[in-house]
Length: 188
Image (cartoon, rainbow, N blue to C red):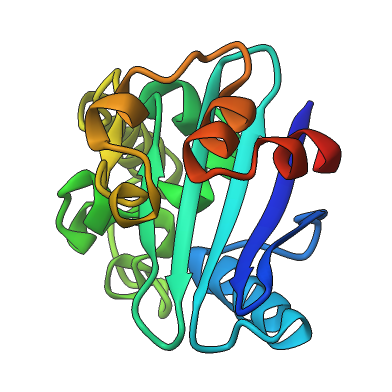
């Protein structure tokens, strides 16, 4: 089970809402969702946080969108998140320090046999490519936190505090640090 919420800092204070990520497939989609929420709450030029948590303390992630700036991302436990469809949205090649060429070979258009002239057994080659990709991607995901640990520093939560947040209830800990503990608890 997952819990997701949007938190927007407006001129009048913070607003929060739980949300569904059914139509979100990429970090770009998630960023668009945050910007739409910013428009609805009047926080277009301010901060919107997207909070994603796999319940039972496996991992949590934050995406911070400030106006039109690129999103900033933090994930508490990358390997746990990598086994999750929501985690895969946050764990971009850039965040993990991988070259985009490390992508799944089944999506590499240059490697596709479109005219049927390549020799060899395509099923065996594809299986070998997928196994190589799986081992490389698993090796390239660190077990612990990844991303911008300073994502909340200017909002009241020091990087050291974020890195050691209680995994049993991270939203409450984050809410307390931001001075919105009751709002964070209410949105849950």
